[in-house]
Amino acid sequence: MPKRDVYTHGHQPAVVNQHARRTADKCAAFARDVIAEDSQILDVGCGPASITAGLGDWVPNGTVTGIEIASDILEVARQTIEASGLENVVVEQASVYKLPYEDGSFDVVYAHQVLQHLTDPVAALKEMARVARVGGYVAVRDADYYTMCCSPESQMIEEWRRIYCLVARHNGAEPDAGRHLLGWFHQASIKNVHTSASAWAYSSPEERANWGFSWAERCLTTSFAEQAVEYGYATRAELEAIADGWREWATNPDGHFHFINGEALAQIS
Image (tube, rainbow, N blue to C red; front, side, top):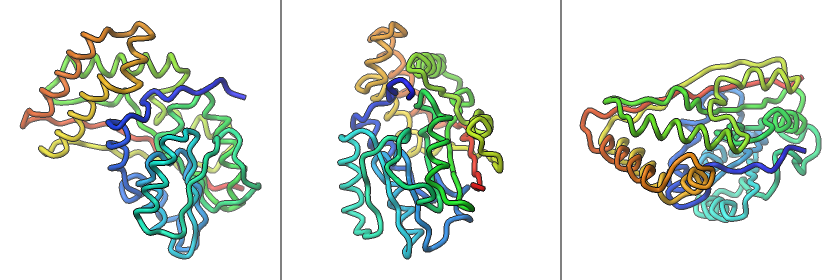
């Protein structure tokens, strides 16, 4: 059993509100062609369930099960699904390392920005593949923090990325997970894997404000900030300076930020 995972971001409002902006259309497009109207889907690490609800819309004759290990975000997910009015979606508390489902229970097992936070992503993939039916799919998407960059260049945002990666790796996680997906799938004995990549970009005034001010707050009020200080990678004053750097970038009309997400889609044989 892997050592206890520590979620680098935390589930404070600044994190949850940002994650709730994610949609199936944007985050699961790479798997759209293998999802039918009657598919049975497992959404691993569903967070506030904004993607989960979108998957539910895709499968009007199927079902979606979202799982989370943390009870606080699970309650948010339940509220999201209740508000959506969807009757084919449920959320449950479960660990990806020990899924409470029979072999071959799902047509698609999906995870978005999950493996990057795990101490043993290969063990998680093995378990995800176990609950996928033969001929079904495991679909995973994760960011690569190394590719995160902005214009105009910002020393403070570069410092944020450096500190974030130190904190994540201190937690036994891999912030550049997107580039490692193929290798992890192969280590999990999942061979029929198609990889792709897509980019997220933020440059409109609304996008800059959302991304920049969100990270400014996250550098001060979330588990990431607490861990950075506790582990000795930053002081509160340094995090304040980084937050100011995010705000400066967010209000710059020339500001642009982008990064790559790695994607892996594997058919189970």
